[in-house]
Length: 448
Image (cartoon, one colour):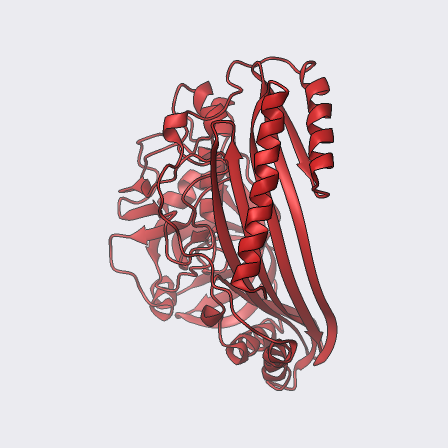
């Protein structure tokens, strides 16, 4: 998309804006954290083999967190010039005097900032032309639309490629830069029979274009899975074993991340408040956070405050080992930041017992439900009570019998986590939480 020399020039331009912002904050007797991003984005979409959208965009965003006498104010700009930066900081200077003081509003501990010279290789630029990308997306469309007579149309196949330049700095005269690339390929297909229509979407995201899934295979998956959903049925209310497929299993652990956040802990708005170092998962289940994972989509050497990240066990032998803290909420509970301003960094749900193939996981369940889609946000973070709409497949004798829809799965997360029996070996590495398909011994299912 961009020549490396051009990227370097743009990085230097952003660094110039960052240094100006910090200088002007100092001039106004304020301190702060400044983040500047430039996103160069290329987008191509086809629908039913016809080019529908071709777009290139380049945007700069600046985010400034201002501190003054234990007061805090935030600025965001998309029109970035020295004049708009200066104008916004002047406005912040007038406003911040009227904000209530909080002794914990301050820059992060200087000793916790990332001070190394290491570089994570998350930048994989590649040369391409529009014809090449068009043929790539056309391969997705052709493989899907030619798959079967029940496949009636495409809802769109998309390729997106981005180069992201990020500069972060603060009033300690600390600043660092990072370069990222992201490549995305997706396919969404619609199948129909005499009774109903179904759609299914497949996608893949990678730092390196070379790691993208084969476009033909992606299209075939999208077509195959949309056809599998045809003839969907309702089932009776029951308690049954369940498998969360790898496409949705990460949801069970995304609620863990929310429950461990500094905000939730400080506000006591989490059902895990008194359960640090308590076993809440089977003792063979562990969760590793690896911010330095090669080509990781959520890899970083430092968080959004500049605090260094580290590889750590979030869950060890089934026990929670840490809260997830930024500077502010860390201070609120008298602890240091854990480098989680802005969220988590590459979680891997691991097993200390042998994993099963997906086919053997189905056989182990023998009869029950395979969940492939969930809908809605249905978790009470105070109690851990969980409820979500879902669809998937009814399994008998370890094989898919027929698709199902219109069910609600519910329970308490603590019980669901304890009911995990085994993991498959089909983890998706490009999600923030990498988790394989999961077999649970039982769950409440509401149907007809």
